[in-house]
Amino acid sequence: MLADLIAANRKQRDQAIARMVSVSAARVPAFAARLAAAGLDATSVRGSGDVSRLPVFTKDQLLAAQRAAPPLGGAVASDAALRKLFCSPGPLYEPQLAGPDPWRWAEALRATGIGPSDRVLNCFSYHFSPAGAMLEEGCLAVGATVIPAGVGNHDLQVQVAADVTATAYVGLPSYLKALVDKAAERRLPWTIRRALVTAEPLPDSLRSLLEAAVPVVLQAYGTAEAGLLGFETAPRSGLRVPDEVFVEVCDLDSGAPRFDDGIGQVVVTLFEPALPLVRFGTGDLSAWTIGHDQSLRLAGVLGRLGEAVKVRGLFLHPRQAAAALGRIAGLVGFRFVVSRVEHQDALRCEIVSETGADQAALATTVRDQIRAALRLTADVVCVATLPAGSSIVDERDWK
Image 1 (tube, rainbow, N blue to C red):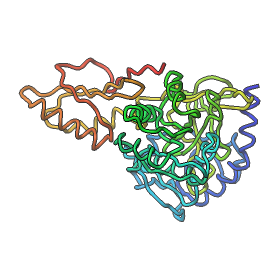
Image 2 (image 1 turned 180 degrees about the vertical axis):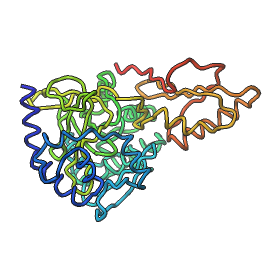
Image 3 (image 1 turned 45 degrees about the vertical axis):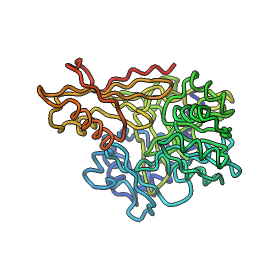
Image 4 (image 1 turned 90 degrees about the horizontal axis):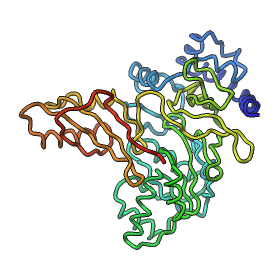
């Protein structure tokens, strides 16, 4: 049955894929060149089966393309109407196209019950990262009022939420717990009844804590490059893939789409002809499953491909970390350790200094550079030696 659902899902998107490929190849020369390199002619592409012959396009390849042809690597039509340019760690630049809800988050918000009567506390960052704008556009599309809270200052956020009677929340699940705890500590009214959370795992232990304060808590999944890719319609229901995007779970070795319940990389194709993001490898691992309503669902994010680790909703990559810290005078070596404390990510940077270096000053310099270059806060600890292995160690337990 699962294979049949996957095949039907692909067939439903064939027409949209063929139309997008035809129009995009004429508007975006870099995409036409990619088709040609794979032996494909745009006019011969009839749907998912043809486009799946394209090799998976990785985030590293997108980054290299942007560096070779800044700022967007020739991946956007020259006549496309752009409204904003965002910058994710890398740096990787993401465009916002003109039009309402360009990242398609409205569908997930409606599934959570968020609509015109809601005041939504948006606790995603509005600084460079697209997450805040993504969810704001979705909230506006469903008619909700947005409170652009961003991240930081829990005291102010719970005070504002109480003052304006916020009824809904979008942001990290761990951040929602921090706000619930802060409101209880300050004995402020808590009026948020619905929450759409994303960008980090939602283990049952944390979900249960949140549901004690927020009756409706649903999870969604998306990326900075592609927007919304899946969302719950009920707790623990699996992630429904939006109609306006084509998602594949692909074999980790061959890149071929899977028609079973095995784990593979989430590979996405957008239907936007001005932005032909086609067979883009998100780096996230998932698997197909059958939902409570017998529909095709993603089983959630089951891990990451490669070395990158997501911390508080942002990716941290060893090469990125090395570039940020590699030129600090007096720093011999470092490693990051990611842990989980009270359902919130904790980041520690262990450093080794040169003999005779001022360790306190060096720790301050490293801490400031992590904040400036990686956009993360970390406790910096001086140690005598570092164990062999990766410069990023993930010790989190998501139970």
